[in-house]
Length: 191
Image (cartoon, rainbow, N blue to C red; front, side, top):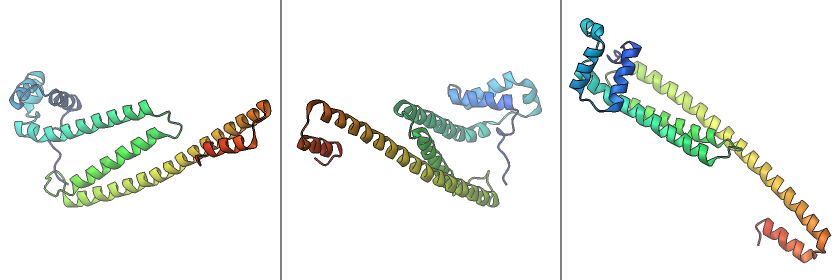
């Protein structure tokens, strides 16, 4: 397997600080290095801070993660806002997002030019991703079956309530059989 990036080998508090600086996007690479040297002088003396090129390489990786987190957060907020969730719409949304993320990861792994991933590790990662995708697909199928069952139960309950109201109407005002038959056709969507 390829060597881990300088940033991934940083002490957790330094890595978190670097990622925060990069996420803010207000400093140039040189300004980030100066800031890091001032903030973490002991790491600077040991040569344990990232170089300009390491920061430059890490930027797009962090950007992709931030975009993915933002997209996930927005998608889940949208699902939350629109789902009564009796049919477990959140799980459906989450499954779709995870399937897309796995697909994107597989596509990135197919790029053999990444020096951080050796070929044996790449094959292992692809195999793991394939297993995860298969598991998500099974989960998606089970979720759709559950949603169909809930939908059928809700339809049956609505039909039962409609039937009860129809019975009440028949008894109270002497509704004709023709009117009752027409109402039934309308309720079943056949008229």
